[in-house]
Length: 137
Image 1 (cartoon, rainbow, N blue to C red):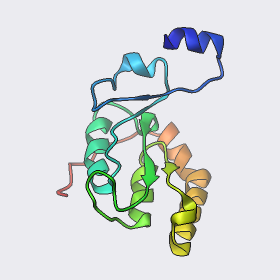
Image 2: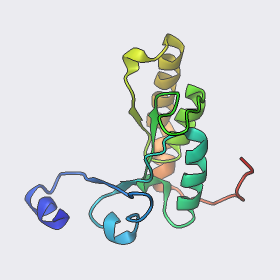
Image 3: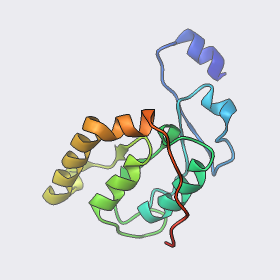
Image 4: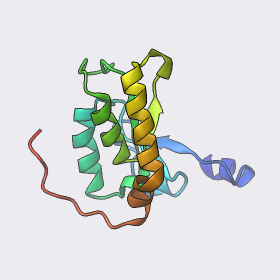
């Protein structure tokens, strides 16, 4: 089906979903340049998820977004700065209502977007990626 959709709409960008990791593979990446790793968007949990995925796949294909806190799955509250930096280790996007965020958090997000557009996006897309040992989280 994705092949037919992309033939009909060649400029369309599709983001697939791994559905718990079961569909994150080269076959799916053929049709979509990025795949959503997990519905668990807690920044601390995502560090483990993204680390594991990075053992086989480059950061540019890992869908990763900043979401609101407390997290809808874990209930954890992490700083905006942390959530943004974790998201920058993937495709970096936002899934939250900025109108509900504090002035300070909105400023943090603005700084992160500027940082990402100035050099992080190039780094996650065009450079070699070397895994460090898994940190104790």
